[in-house]
Image (cartoon, rainbow, N blue to C red):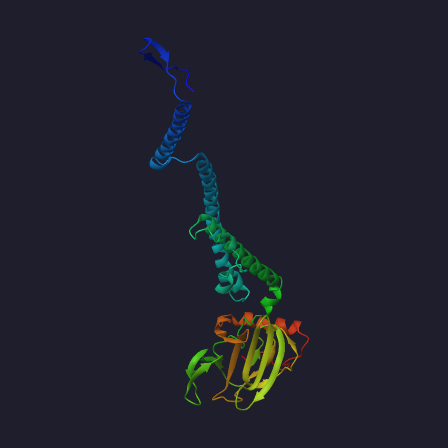
Length: 335
C-alpha cells in the first residue's frame, strides 16, 4: 500500500483530515493495479515478441542449439561430398579397370544402389519433414555406408582373384590357335551374324574361321584340361573342347587329326591336332570358339595375328619342352 496519505477539508471543523477509504475500495484499487501491471506486461511481450519478432529466452537457446547442429550437419555433408567423389573414382576404376583385367563382371547398379533395408528403418523420423537436414543427412550417411561396404566387398573379391593372377594369365586363351604365318591361312569368317554357307539362312556364327589346307598344326591357346573330344558328322566334325578354368573354354572344330584325349592337361602352345574338313563344312578350315562364363565371345579379341612367327615358334618349343605329353612327335610346324 502507498505511504502517501490523502487529506480532505472538513467543512464542519474547517480542518484538513486524513481521508479514509473503505477497505473494500482499497483492495479493489490494489487488485486493479496488479491487473493493470499484468496487462501492461502482456502488451509488452506481444509488442516485442510478436510484432517486432523478438524470441523468448528459451526459444533463443533452442534456436542456437539447432543452428549449431545444422552447421555441423553442413560440415558433415561437405565431407560426404568429398567421399562421394572418392567413391565415384573407385567405382570407375573398379568396373572399368580392375574387373576388366581379371575378366570379372561389373557390380550391377541394383547392388550398388540398393538401400540398407529393414522394416521402418526411419520410423523415428516420421514427424520430421522430408526436407529436414537431419532426415536427408541420415539417409545419405546410410546410403554412403552401404556403398562403401559394397565397394569393400568388390575389392576383397578382386584381391582373392589377384592372388591367382599368375595362373590366370597363363590360362586365358590369348594366342592364335594356328601359326601366325599369314601366307598359310586366310581369315574366312569372323564372329557374328552371317549367311550360312550351306542353308543360306542368316544366323549367328559363334567362332572365328581360319581357312587353310588340311594338316596345319593346331595349338592350345592357353593352359587347361581337355574336357571333351568328339566327332559329329553333322556338326563340328572332329572337335576338342579345352577347359582353361576361370570361366574360359575353347573349341577347335572340323579337325583332321586329334592328338589329345579327354582329361589330358595341356600347356599353352602344345599341338593338339591338325586342321581338316570334317563334319558340317564346305572346305578345309579351323573353326575356333572362345566361351566365357557359358557365353560365346569374339575370339578375335583374345589373340594377336601380328605376333612374329619366330616368337610363336619359340613359345611352342618351350611348351613342348615343359610338357610331359608326347604330342605330334613327327612334325612341330608346317611351313
